[in-house]
Length: 440
Image (tube, rainbow, N blue to C red):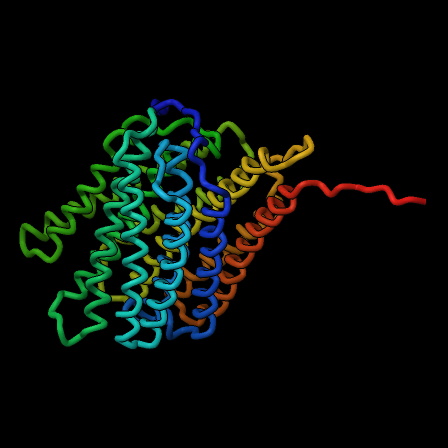
């Protein structure tokens, strides 16, 4: 198979936002993940017994909103101008407001699940829906204009991911409203929860990872471009399958069979992306795999394992399988991909901004030296070990605390590594100290 996708194209830095904008998101996200892991370590087995446990739901939303969505929103505010030539209006003020509201909303929602207090669900709705609507609205205004030539596959996938985010937020808002005012609603909560999870993980997260991969995998991991059959209408087909699976959910008879066919096609579609990505990574120009490449291999393997587990015929009802599916999709697929990209994006942005910020003819260090690879490899090893232990803990709850402790350590190590890049940037961007001679 020879990739025949669109050629690589130059990036546009004319509308590049200040480094502080994406960096606030990237430095906040690992702390939310560490908080989720720390709370899991504190509560132990009761927090990982069933997907319907309030403790489990609190930890899940800390991860998905506070870590995954936090990183993805920060990355989009950075990527849209650079990759698509799309100027997000008032990007500095929008980015600061969304970051603050998303952080507050994620914490409030986690507290609402943890304490099971209806008033907190109502309180969490305002900042969360406000943050997501402001972000989507600003991106929509920006993408209304013509995008840069050659960025159609990336921008098209981002549009669909943002649409999935709107649907996810709508379902989530309805569910939070049902928890806030339990006596005033008669909604099919279990079906809505399944759809909320599907649109969030496969739609918002999955489609955005695919769209971003079309640009960053060839660029940062030095692979061939993705083949044309993926960079064409592939994300549109996946979105339509998600819509068809949602509309046929809960139907009996022929509707149920149609729903199962849609799920099988969805699994095949995402597995195709994972398989092609692994193929491209195996044939990359540099034979030695760096931490980003290894992280993406873990992410794609986790995605394929999750899809197989999702469609595997089940006998007796088990709480372990849905939990393992969540671990594979959230910690295995999404968090691994995000970890890998942060190790490329943050050093690259620091290096780029330092080129203009350093005075006196000084030159910034190479991007691959801004975060020492040895430290990234240690953090990767801790993440993979934690992921395997978390999977085992779904079936053997006694492993919950050691798994959570290791994941907390991995997330804090990521944060420290990113802080290394940020600290180096702030140190080097300052003008060199003036040396004055002292009279003898």
